[in-house]
Image (cartoon, rainbow, N blue to C red; front, side, top):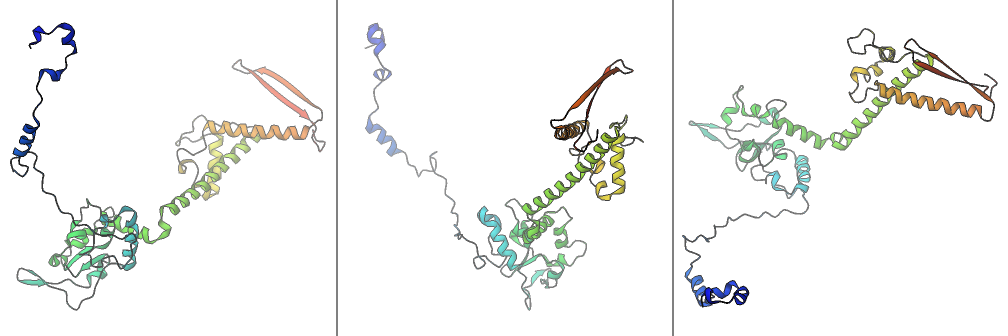
Length: 339
């Protein structure tokens, strides 16, 4: 039946499957049977799987489990992350592998045999020697090695060019040490920090924090004492030019400088020797401290007056800029009978 002879009501109820015949299940099975998965030209062919050797790592790391020979031991990054510090500590307890042999195996260079020398351990204490590979390794670089490390020779492959070691200017061991910013020296620092408990991050942070607290207290105390003296004498705090190159930086800063000249401990924590965010010399800090002073004075006056009689004198006048200035004076007799 063509779609032209279908009534409108019937045509609207038809589905897509009514216009096509279902495929025979036998045809589908025949198609599947005709496709050979093992055929090299098939796009569904699976790639060969790579066999990965599984290494059994115990839940706890102890010295007997760890391989002593640097040429046979597992890379440090192959251990679980939460166990690497335990591995490092156990290796540090054992120390670098530096066996003393009566004769080290020779390596031929241009018809000459070269041997590893035991005296190199004294010159380079970080050296590791592998009997299995007759190669030299770097002990601290192995301890803190990463998978993307540049020093593959001294951490995985091993160094064997003994002839070059005897060259003073181009000694590979000295070049491996490098300058103070080399990866080897960073590994040496990590080694020392792991051995010395005083270098651990928690203790270092606590030490620095406690020192900062003492410095901040001394700096703030110096500012408070200077402000108390200026407020008592009724002197101005700020100066016209408070820059470093100014000859007169204002009463407050000059008073702080005076205390710094007398006391070296104060000089080490105030003004230019103070952090930029904790100098305690800004006008905002002055206003906050003066507000605290005023509250303390008011509370003391309230306690002394109590229920006694007092009087308030108010006066105002115009200054040179024609601005009214008002003064308030509280007059009372304290508990000692003094006005």
